[in-house]
Amino acid sequence: MAPDPRPPLLTMSGITKSFPGVRALDGVDLEVAPGEVHCLLGQNGAGKSTLIKVLAGAHQPDGGRVVWNGEPVRLRSPSAAVRLGIATLHQELDLVEGLSVAENAYLGHEPATAGFVRARAARTATAALLKRLGHPEIDPARRVGGLSAAQRQIVSMARALSHDVRLIVMDEPSAALDPDEVDNLFRIVADLTADGVAVLYISHRLEEIRRIGDRVTVLKDGRAVARGLPAATTPTREVVALMTGRDAPYAFPDRPGPDEAPAPEPVLTVQGLARQGEFEAFDLALRPGEIVGLAGLVGSGRSEILETVYGARRPTTGRVLVDGRPLRPGSVPAAVRAGLGLAPEERKAQGLLLLESVTRNVSVSSLGRFSRAGWIDRVAERAAARTATRGLSLRPDHPEAPVRTLSGGNQQKAVLARWLLRGCRVLLLDEPTRGVDVGARAELYAVVRRLADEGLAVLLVSSEVPEVLGLADRVLVLREGRVVHEAPARDLDEHRVLDLVMEGSPAA
Image (cartoon, rainbow, N blue to C red; front, side, top):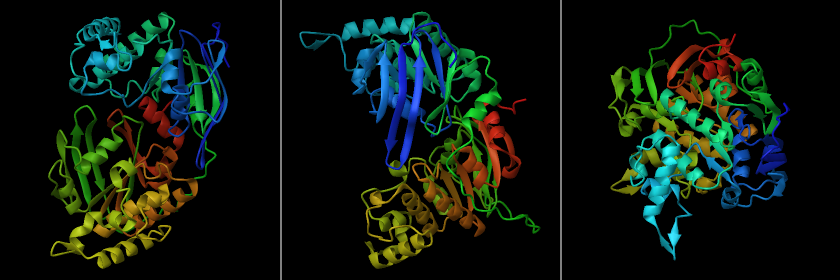
């Protein structure tokens, strides 16, 4: 580790944390000094989120030691971490939209006298914090629900500073900010560190790390593979090399060989599709039997593109066509009728009826087929669902079992079976193997490839670069809402893709 002349404010030694079937942290060490910007890097699934949840008191480690300002501590809860002076700004800001800026800033520790909240005192104190953060124009009495993404982040920082904070954890703080807002964020960070506040900064953007960071710790597969690297001078290729290379096997099915027959006409055509603030003009021609992968970091617009194609978001400009016929913008029913199906990233929250049976989860998008005079023909429904799930080797083979009792891989198969039963022609897959163990991944890969070989068109989003490269035929690389590169998957490797998504062009 590169030496730091300051005594450490935080030392985490040998931190371990396991979840069922997954060892998320495997003896991680981290040291942060007062007034330092310490950057934490790693691919999705490397253990960053788990580590900061341990630091925030949201997870209890299975082993290891935390020393704060020279004293061993137990972070038994988020409130215990806050009392020590540790504040966490999560990527998904945990603000209450119906409350005012001041009420959010002092939520849980409101100024009070004799049990009565002093709202005016809270607004005055919040105004002072907002001025310190360079945003005196934000009205402390305004409701948070009406603020921009950048303003909400400022409110989250004000909440952190309303405590006697000594360490702020920032998780992808620039993901939703424009360049001017990022400059203001960095000014705030510089002011905080000048006052001795330490910042643990998590980002995928290496140019930000070099600009703002002092030292870097890199996580891979739950381990710290490098600690204390100089942020400004460590070459991009060295950081990328540390982040890549995996112990977990990826068993991908073989791609079909070159086909000398004329390419079929696109089943899905996307022309100039854009959503303001999320992604720029996106074009795609997706043919039957083809798997196209979208590679990019969180905030690059990958999922937003899928949801806009599916009609769950209304585009600012552009259009989506199936077999040359335009779809009505922002209409999920129109997309489904045209043969599109979406397996969403948040499978449990958005893709499944957890308390319902496997049968009902598979049939829910096709219930009209089984309706007779307002009644569901349950025999026909069960038979059709059973046929669809058997084709995907869903286990256990109990159609009436609650879908919540299935493993992650089999829950995903239930979502796929739903769209196969519906007669889907274009399958949109968002993080298809999230929460799926290694063995089930290989099964899902084989299922997706078989479906493509049978003529299904697939548009795939995954945070795991090996997954995109191993499964897709063609890859579009996204950075900050625009396509920066397109190539056959066989012409790319993991280093090249990471260079592109972090720098916008291949590193020298």
